Image (cartoon, rainbow, N blue to C red):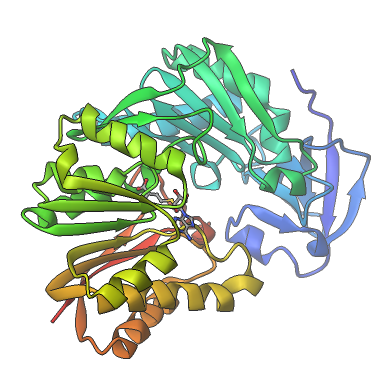
Length: 400
Ligand code: SAH
């Protein structure tokens, strides 16, 4: 078990404001002095320049974010008991959300927003898939895995710590079984009335876009008897929701043939009509242009692209990308048609996203209204002290 040495971080004068508001990140530029020689992920105490204790956190010497806060309570020691309490709290909130639902796949731990910076734990049926994305989460990995096995009857815990962000924390990518059994290549999950195969070993992130659950559900209201175009479909999430709701036709587009293969299997898994669905492997930008040139029209279009802006410097370029696909979508929607449009880039703020979509509609010569604002599902909470946790935003627009 990791030892709790007492290392001290002393901030520069006037740099404690964000901590007083309980923001969990301390940037290296705010730090005057590090006392002792804490190893990567070790627990440190943070003091103001005037010597007041402010928080305890995990030290990450290679990152711009030098410390991620574990606790703002001086009496709360960072021990296995601390992690047990945080896990318990998160599990309780998920129990409230899903107890009365057949859904057996959801985010159990949403990192900073569940008070556990850098730790993501997703449940897929009998298995958990984890990401340890910060030095502190990595430091406490064994403790966390042990606690999860004690608190939840998982058959196995699988690690997918293969995101680029680990590099910034001085950590190597890691993938494999952490406890219990190796999960099968595809795990079957239930999401409301839908079933999906999830590839937790090779799929994106931990295997599935759980954050879109509520929005997939919403799509069902608009899909009956409609021609639906699902862009950036991955394994077909929105497409399955549309078919289940009675869509007349569905096209899934994704650049990954593997993802579309699973999308096809998901149609079978739900006993839906494969004749009504087409899988197109290719680039959404190009295919939408082709549809526009061919005069193809749709009643409902979903745009759920990957993160176009990974950092602040990429916002402008990303905005052009979002505008382009939204403009194309507005060009190929039938009168009265519905657009579900998303951005999962945290750096693109909701007002900017709305402006991009508005500009796209004007340039496409369409009048449209927002009929619903969308966000990430409730198992992806956003701590009030951590607004950065709000990354997914979406609009349902109806064109005239
Ligand atoms: N809507 C999906 C998640 C989409 S993730 C769901 O609910 O599950 C984004 C997807 O876009 C990924 O599957 C990725 O393979 C695909 N993608 C990325 N760039 C693309 C492009 N230019 N054209 C088509 N697909 C692309």
